[in-house]
Length: 462
Image (cartoon, rainbow, N blue to C red; front, side, top):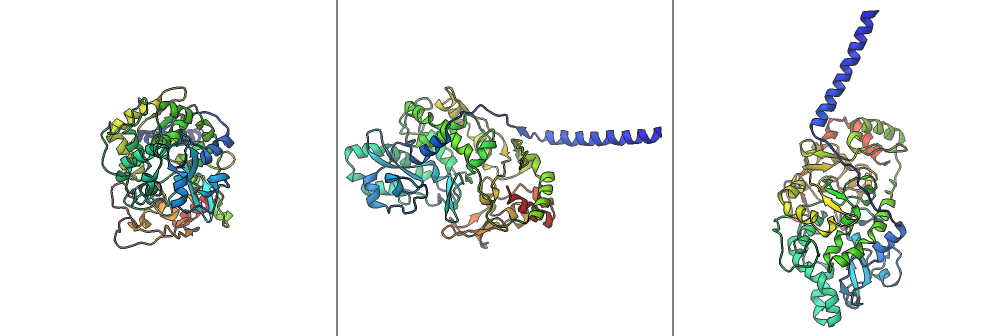
């Protein structure tokens, strides 16, 4: 009897030691927990109203010329009133500091998308085209090029900050393919022309600007409520409101204007945290989804969290040695420290709600709420469907989706696509290009085909 008890104890100890060994090995790969930062609170209704009507950008095209040269929007997705009812959802009509009515781009240029006829505020826009960006192809600057010589002195002054910025950035923001975002490049170009303390515009760059554009996919806003850091590499720490208002540097006059705009972004953050992901609109096989939840919990939840009544999210940074996805985004932070230094010494890193950048060689494992509607996948939008995300062998080297008449595949979960035999600039996603690789995140490869189908069915429920 004693020997049997000793044997049981021995095996229990062995199991514990094996478990500890696994934990130590996992920790040795330096998965990094991101601790929370104190965030502002606010009024979500006020934040929403500020997003869709506010003047966080204060320079733009005079409304009188905009309405002459651009067709008025007939959708009014946001049910706005007055002149805002007649411009697209991603523009606001506001008063400039010299009381000129101007049309300005808004955060919804990137952070809203029409899906199946409905506008979803907070869904990343994957239909923008930065591959052919220029003054001629930009609706705002195109109007200016046609009409700026007709502006009155007052209108000219109201439009000039926006046009100064576009003159400095548009020629350097071109991506290799449609549908990816150049927001990181825009931020780099703009801060290179801004005094870090006063935020005043400098005609010549004060920082060395690297060549090349790092493509990104736009993450859904509703994920932010769970995250302790912003951006794909988790390097946005401290006050989220300061990062959310960064679009203001497109036209900001100085730090005093930035302070006024910043006063609204506690409300904006409250609105963003109030957004919930849309529910999957098609029938779901509940039994298969239940099986998928078991597979997901065993294989995926350590990094991506659990969902339901007692949900958890671990807020983990996954090092490059584990995730193995395209490295250009996180390497650009390490190879261009002048921009990290600019931000961490700037107005944004000071005051009652400071923010800071903390680089990491890898990427955050995001929450997966509403993942079904957020295709394409990975931080650079290189994987078209959940099916190919979970089976790296099926990922196409070249793929093309119809951005004008897109069709969603609700079974494979993602946009339908073609697989050309060779790349075509702009229209075909070429995963052999730097920054556009679809490698890495191969964790689904070890699953069986039935297990992958079950996981996809479960992911539809999130």
